[in-house]
Length: 76
Figure 1: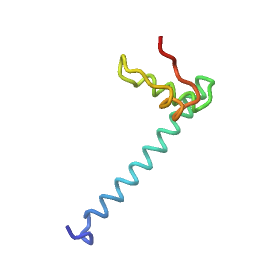
Figure 2: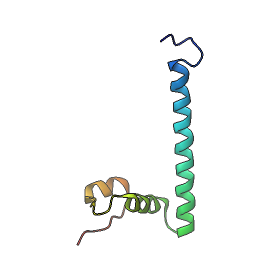
Figure 3: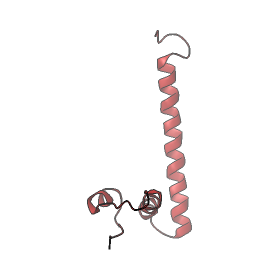
Figure 4: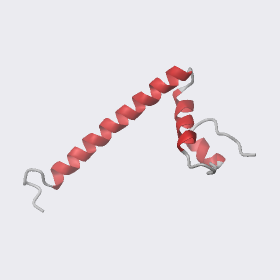
């Protein structure tokens, strides 16, 4: 496809990049507000969101948890 055509691949790529930047900014702001509401550090709030969104019964290994947060729930 010719990238000089309006709406071509280059334009779509730029629209996608802008949409991802906007999503990232919104996600970060949501996490910051969530943390403030809970009275915890934003890292802990993001960890709680990760845990809450995990599939039921799925366990997170400590190595993966430490890569994303300073705290992780321990299994039984």
